[in-house]
Image (cartoon, rainbow, N blue to C red):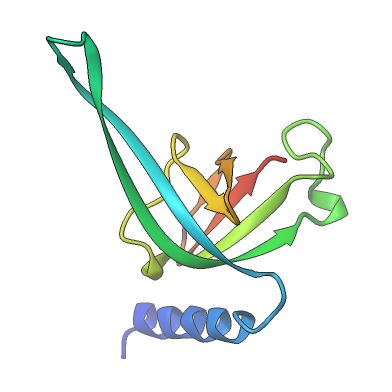
Length: 118
């Protein structure tokens, strides 16, 4: 087993254990892509892709909050990257319990951390 396989297995095990916690949430990554213009309507065709996954919603620690880019009411969403078919991008949105959140930052080693401003 390679080091990468060992790391991936450890991340999967940690997310599996965390899934039983209260802060585990069903999420949908939403990506809307504009393409060619329709000559009849003069509007772009929009393509929407959705990717369902389970994430762990947590608050930022006090030392992470700077009051500007990260505020007290902001949250971060931890995601097991191998669970996604679409890698998250800043232009995407995440839907949790019917509410759409903007993504302000993405960090992706083996898990993605999405900064979700309130």
